[in-house]
Length: 224
Image 1: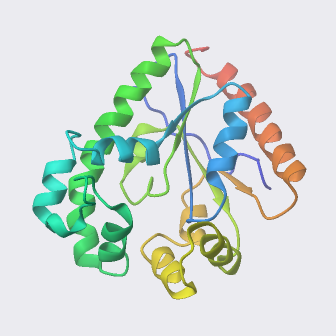
Image 2: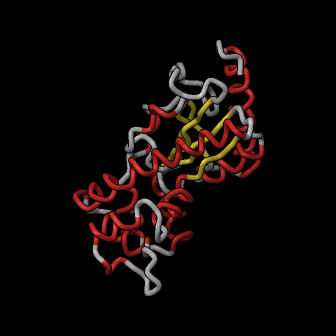
């Protein structure tokens, strides 16, 4: 079933008619960013919500002042920039603190994402991928035609997070617990992919999903 369409796409008349939008999500460590890069290689315009987050958190960025006011100056580096590791340790595993942060961040990120969608249209792109770990938690389904989820077993996700971010297993588990689990994501997905096997198998899945997507797009009334 990997790469196949599991349920009908959302109709999104409010989105630009020339643009088909995929929301790409998955638990931390699932490899969704590598999938995003593969889709970019096939011609998609990719919006990296992590990069948008960096932009929002930067001094002078739209989230900087509200986040510092909410969490205090001890989340800052000496140069005044927000230390995302310190902020992360404050909110992961603490639902109340996490909600304070997401109430600030998600509306700002949604606005920046919509600006990027306009940019995709300006560049003449027909498919846009929003790469966002918290896509469903943030309620961004209303910005996409399809949700694509990257799945791997949680034990593998923990191993990858520990290796990639230098966190302890407990910290990695805590990060995963602040997100929907893989099954919850799959239940709301149109397409499911996995990075569990060798890279060439991942590539084959992505190419299959992309080819099927092109067929769907060309059947839509807008004709793209």
